Image (cartoon, rainbow, N blue to C red; front, side, top):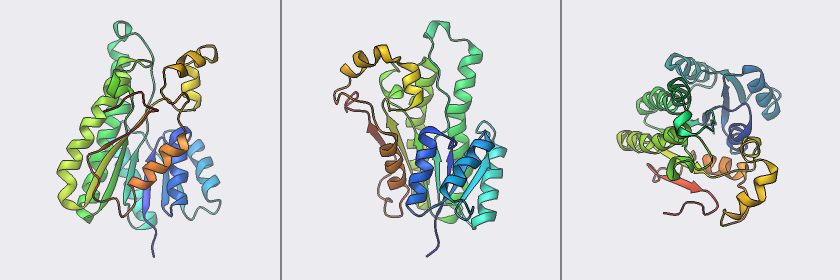
Length: 247
């Protein structure tokens, strides 16, 4: 049986690299896409030193042509692409009244426009093939207003939740699903940077489960939603936040 192929954006480190590993472990060929090609190549080598099932991909998510080049590279390499995980993002923390227009636009360009372009470019491919899986990384910040992040980051992540529903609705008749995952604070370097160690105990006291989340679990959920038997789940946002936001 041939392996399905997935592209993961922002996969040179952190949650993206964990998602790439989870998909690879689940039997996917994986395109490790990142603007930092050298780091992406390191991840690809760790997954498969022979290069047979892991391919580093240079990708600037702000450019549709870059997504098209990534698509063509993977189709040329493995014949098709079945899944896309839009993970690439930049995190910014700044009081809302101090955010400049340039800072707002920069965060929106990567986090929201980048997700839109990926969904659009690969959505066209998946529609033409009659099958596809799209996973978008949203955030708790997009649901609760971003109590520990900037308004531009929170706004972009909230937009991803809505955008996911639009793509899910429009692509559902063509065998394509689109879902979002909204993590809360994870045990990752970026969270430890935003929340200094001398404030961590106080921070965790406000998390109902009393601890940070695991990037590996986020990755496993992404891989599960990319599976062939996940076709009845679309337009959903999976909350993984330790009880900080409950519907």
